[in-house]
Length: 487
Ligand code: ADP
Ligand code: GLC
Image (cartoon, rainbow, N blue to C red; front, top):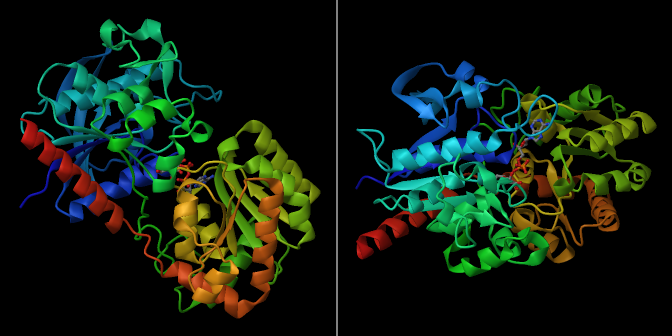
């Protein structure tokens, strides 16, 4: 039996363009689904970075009027992905960050830029391409949030839709005055529609109109139905609870494999963990840290943002230094946090180092050399860095929220006795609790044999995509099944 045809719609896709975990997921899930016979085509904006990296593309059809400008739809195959690229220079022909102008503010026409993504997804869903029509349209995050809305509002036969929420904090809210410009009917500007606190809400629209909503862990799926995590959308999410599920992300086990990783100075496996020592020495040089093999080296690979609890980490730095830890931070984001980490590095020479850039190879090197990976997030839909940490033997120290709660087993006494611990969790998300967890880790790190066991257990955990891909495939099947019962 051939599987369903799915149009996946996302604004990022690794290895072509990525600002965070969305890119990793959008790039890896389609390949895992492909293994299960699900045929996925990926619709993606043609940013310069994407067009430059494409090895071969064919023009598929002209787009003479895409919200006021001309473009083309291109098709290509690369890295095992079947791509549909929107080459629309008036929207995407800008180098650098996909959402931000060089001055760090949102591009002023982001509403149109990403409405165009959703609009085209809807058109393809309703037969724009003569020889390929998807059975399902699967949209990711606010940037693709209007796809389910355009389809539902068209009044024409349409495929069923799925919206996956990777992060409720980014909602895509724009002035109501843009309704006409975005081809949205005025009747849709309602609570039962695209309206959200007086604005047009792209994510809200997707949540309201999608046939199914998923998010990237069961705990986050529960959390977002509460005011503390729902960011104002908890009411709608509760109303749609019977259509909402949490599926924990996997990681790409080929891209993230310490045995074959081309970015690592020394490759290793769960059996040959000793090789990590020279990776650690390499990291200490790169981050300007003291060449001390025994010092517990904590790594951070993160957007520097409130979500990620980076201010809490800053608050914990004096006690972390007192515990004799080293800290290597790879991150970009809030200017104030960047400055604070720079200052901390100056205040603790040899103990704290930071690289404030996006540097994919260095992210791999940190996972391959740090003793532990710190993820003190205030909320975390899934989190991927702790999964990379498991795979690389960088023991995760995480707050007990969202996907972090679902993927790490705390090394408490019982879990250690049972042989199931994989890392350290703390709650509540405070400086003190973070310090407590690091303290426990530092103590356990002194027992080399015990620490090795913790690392090995993490490294042998199943963190690939196969389980999640099965769950998405099942979701698609159930959607098509209920569709065939009602039509
Ligand atoms: P989020 O998507 O919320 O940022 P995730 O943990 O899901 O968090 O994914 C973050 C991804 O971005 C990981 O692949 C991580 O390695 C990567 N990353 C974050 N910051 C950097 C950076 N400065 N350089 C390289 N990779 C980074
Ligand atoms: C988001 C979330 C992160 C998640 C990623 C991929 O950016 O912040 O927790 O892992 O999307 O789903």
